[in-house]
Structure formats: C-alpha cells, structure tokens
Length: 395
Image (spheres, one colour):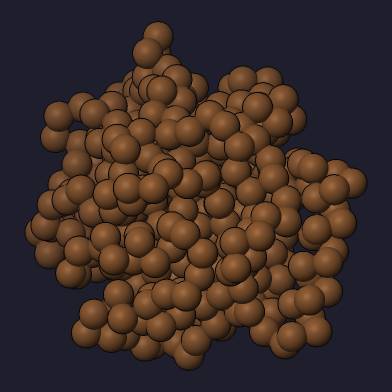
C-alpha cells in the first residue's frame, strides 16, 4: 500500500520530533510552520534522561540522544541558593546519572531545533504556512487541514502548535485552556562574567533566578517573578535589575551582560484542567497544545518529545494498515494520565517558588536546609517516576 500521509502543525521541539519519528517509520510527512523561517531564537531548554532516551530512537546509528548528550554543558555540581548567596542544598550530575540513568542536559533550544530539522527529508518543512482550520475525520474519512494555499488531507494530523493552540480551540471549544499561573518568566543567553560561578537556582520571596553554563561557553539565565499578567517594559533588563539586581554574584553581572532586546519575557501558563482526550478523530494534540505546564521541573519540552515518540510507535509504519483510531485512543490512554501528573507536580513546585510572605519563605528555607543536610539529593526526587521513564521502543 502507498505510504500514509501525516501533517504536523507547528515546528517546535515536539512537532519536529513527531515529524522525524514519523518520517523514520516511512510516513509521508509535511510540517506546517506559521513563522516565515526557523530562526535561531529562544534560550535554553532542559532535556532530562527521559527525553534523551526518546531521542535515542531517532537518527539510526547516530542516535540523536547521544548527540544531545554531547552538548552537555557541565558535569559537576549545582544547587539551591538564597538571594544573599547562602547555599541550602546541592546535587550533582553524577547523582542524577546514578538515579535516572543519565544527566540532565541543558542546551540552547536553537541547537535542538537544528538537530531535529536535520533529520527531516528535503521538502518536509513548509514555513510561512499557518493552519487556518481543521476537520478531524476518523474511520475511513481523512483529517483535513485548511491553509491559505488550499486543503491538505491526511491520515494523521499532529497538532503541536503551542500553549495558545488554535487546533485545540477548534477541537475543544468549551475547554478553559491554559491559565496564567501568577508568575512571569524572563530568559536570556549571555557571555559569562569574568569571575567564575557554580550553576545554581536561587529562590527569593516570589522570585527565582537560575544560571547554567552552555556548551559554547555562554550562560543560560532564567528568572520568574510573581507579577501581574500582560506586563512588559521597553527594556526588560530594567525589570530584572529591579527584581534581582541586589542578589548574589553572578546575577547582577549577568544582567549587565545582556544586550538590548535579548531578554525574552513570557507569562507562564498551565493547563487549567486536563483535556477530556488528547485526540479527536485523526487529530492528536502533543506538547503544550495538550498539557501546558510551569517550567519548574524542566519537563515541558521533555513531555512533548515523549508524546511524539509514543505517537509514532503507536501509529506504526507508514506502509502498514494500523488501526489509527485505536492507535490514537491508546495514545490518549497512555499520555493523558502521565502528562496530567507531571503538570500537577510542576504546579506544586511553582507554588513553592511563588511564596512571598516572610513566615512562609522562612519555613521553606528551613525545610530545604534541613533536607539538604539529611538527604543531599532531595531536589532530584522531584523527577522520580519522570526522568527515569523509557519509551516503548526502548523497553
């Protein structure tokens, strides 16, 4: 039989992983991306061992997971600090590798996009083409994606169009969608300061800052703060100086190293409630389109990668007569409970970072300091059952 046809909406990490996985299984795949080009934008992204093992299923002998591991930026220790500089807990990449079968790798998002795009056959990616409408299909009826250039019929449509997914709104018009968590994030990649530092995450009153070196020598900086939604400033460095300028080294130096217009600011959203399903007919939602979550566990991109690889596994080879309706039902059955649990765990950590009252922050600090002495790798336990997961093809 002729190879089956897939259309992927969105060329982010999840969409590109899905496209690569389906192409490797023989599907004729088209990726629609509304942006006019895939520019090297964004900042850092954490890929935990669960995502790395998924990427191991791609790339043949040159396992994509190994190529990601080669981008590992640091191999030593990191920890949790207070704004004055005091360390209250530490862990290490060695401890993460022992616990989860590998370290957590932090890389530039653009490098991962380039890696995944390189797996796609020529002509797979179409930029500047937004998906304007969808019809789910099902049974003997194909799904349909409407574009300005006409309609595309497909045996399978993968909606990877992000937090504000237009496909999700069409499929589930009464679902509340992601909600603002009460915190906003800032991210940037900068040149390192002259004085060295250890990778760290620092928690203050309703504020958080992280500094992690990247493989190219630059530093990935990320911050969150409990502020009203929808805000912006002509120069976001001013907001960072106001919120974090008095914190310990290297925070002020990193803010000063940021160039004009290089700071990304986004309100943080999380799934207000789980979707009733991750699919309708022959359309399946993956990544933030299905289960947006706070970034505090570093699992947003990882869960999108999991979604993509599990989907390709269940969909079967492109030249097989897999029952796709049953395959997508199985995808929802496998992915909805897992991603809902990860969303809820991420939200619990986010609420801890957003504490602002002096007594609550003092209690949080005392708890973490005591735990850091009694269980040095306590921070890693938040990823138990998550980072140690393996995709079906690897089991």
